[in-house]
Image 1 (cartoon, rainbow, N blue to C red):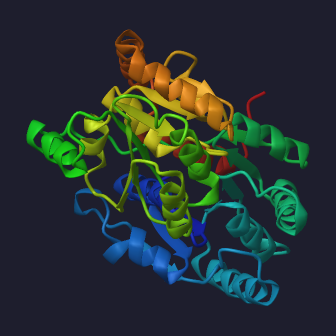
Image 2: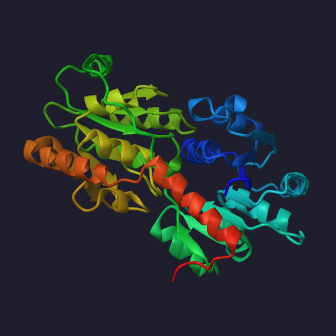
Length: 380
């Protein structure tokens, strides 16, 4: 693969997708592969500052090109024209787009080009539900399914969905979390003291305060455990568009809750928590689930997307998404049964030992690029 340029195309991305692309870019650069990342300027500022890679290795260049976070036909058309020109100038050996919107823009920009290099698209998220947004994303899925040479998906349900849209070469994408060192005892004590709740058990949720994360369901569940003595403290770490709505919901329900905002001490918060909850409506390979498993924390999570593949049946208590009653019952069961909490902790560490590493993800991507550039067919 040395001497081949890889062009990554990204849109306006959230933390997990941006970190994933940055990880792949660093890994390729460290192996002597030229990398260019193409995407919105704010994506570059957040995930590719100064173009520096791991251990100071150059990560390649970043080309600013606006791909909006929602369908905007005129702007998308301009982005496609600009991307076509950028790819013609770079002449990459492989184009790897991340997300349906970036994938569709890349597919249309590459249409009719001669010679046309191979295009891989990684699908990181499930599309929105029905209505107009769902219809638009169905079109994007079909464009990606029929025009990408390979579609990589972060969960089995997405892989099945893209095959149903017509994709013929579908593989799994690895999305590992960055391993974090165990927090010092002092940091854990400070995190717990910062919650200011003394002997009350702590239920922790971490993520963007957005509809996909299911935090409205979590607050409805918290209202059902208020009568426990002592009542658990619900701690939510993260920012997002639902911040004020969730605060109002917690106040109206009289829930003991702390909104922590964006935190850079998540490992200490995990260690300080009695239960970690991931109530998402959908997830692929969520970083917080991987982080909780590696920290050996008792975990309650939604049975959706790729979560069961990460946790197995023993690494977490899995509940139906959107079911506040089942979520409340699961959290209570962990808090009220120290033996169950200990069993979950041990199972979490065992599951964590089998999680893919960043090196695994980079090697898998390189193997994919090698297959795409050599014309080797997909394995049966």
